[in-house]
Every structure is written in structure tokens, then in C-alpha cells.
Length: 255
Image (cartoon, rainbow, N blue to C red):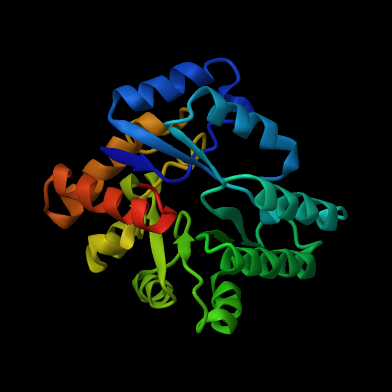
């Protein structure tokens, strides 16, 4: 069994064949799909997946850093209300994005810190997005080093030293399709950290692994990511599946 710990299968890219895409994943042995949130505009679609596939699709709630705009306070209130009244498996995805738009950097940090506080309050893992912002993220996490905070660096963007630093903060390293790319540093990261610190993710519909690169990504391709890791680590696919599944279940408190 494999778990896709990060898929946006509720996104508009799947509007034509969402049910089929989820079923393809299940047929490929990917029985659990964790759905990170973006903002309230997509939450109904996310929860619709959960309603249709309650044993396979597990919801998260959060505010993505690129969705932090003038109305971020309203978005955070939505997150707080949802988490108070419904079952969620994680907070996120949240984090810092210094790549797309730097208009709301201060608000991104405020939103991140408030979601970290929620993760601690509700004993939930946090899913961190980092783009051109890893050092800034580490500096914020220093303030929570002595708390119960845990989570995953989704689509980990750093090198081996930075990966070990993230692990030292009590976080897992999320490895996706980038590990299959020829010029990626991710193979080096995977080679130098323990499987006990890795969880698998697609980030579908984005970051499609080889040999499907250039097409829409989907959860069924998590097996290709696992196979790439097995080759890099010189272990069996079964071992990668067993350990990363155990890690994901532990992090997201899945029975």
C-alpha cells in the first residue's frame, strides 16, 4: 500500500475525470489520498471528494501563502471555524512563497504563525510550502522548537544540509516527482537521509514524474516516485512502500 500525502485532486484540472483519477489511484494500490487546502474557494470541491470517497480521501484545512491577499483575515477565520467544527487531518498547506508575489510577505508570515498555533492547539501536523523562502521558514520555526509542532516540508526545496535541519525541527521530508528529474538535487537528498524521514506525495496536478512529465500529474503516479526512491536507496519497492506508509500514518494520525 502507498499513500499520496499531498494531492490537489479537487482542482479544476480534474473536473472532467476526477472520479476516474481517484479510482486509478486506488486500483494502483494508493488507497489513501491526503488533500491539502488552498483557500475557501476550493474547499467545497475538496470536501466533495471526501464525501464521494470517504475511506480514501482525507481532508486538510489551511490557507496557501499565494492565497494570502487583502482578505487574509477572513480566510483565516474560515480556517478556524472549520477546524473547530469538522474533522481534519492536518493544517495546510501553508508556508511562505517569495517567488510569485511579494506584495503580502508580512501577511504571509502572520497567516503562517496563526496556522502554526492552530496546529499546536489541535495537535495536528502542519504542511509547509516553501518557495525561495527556506531560511525565513527555518527562522520562524525556531520560535516553536520547544513545542509539539510537527509536520512535513512539502515538495522539499532544499539540499542535504537543509533537509537534516528540517528533520531536526521534527519534520518529515515530502518527496515527489522532482526526484525523478535528471538534474534534480532530490536524489542526493534522498540518498543521504533515512527512509524513516520521508513521506511520498504527488502535488498533482503539478510536478509530474518521469516518464509522464509534460502531462497532468495524478495520484496513481506515486508508485513511480516510490520506485525512483527504491533505486536511489538500493532497497525494494516494498520496503519504500512499508516505511513511507508507516511514516504518513504516524504523522497524520491515521488508524
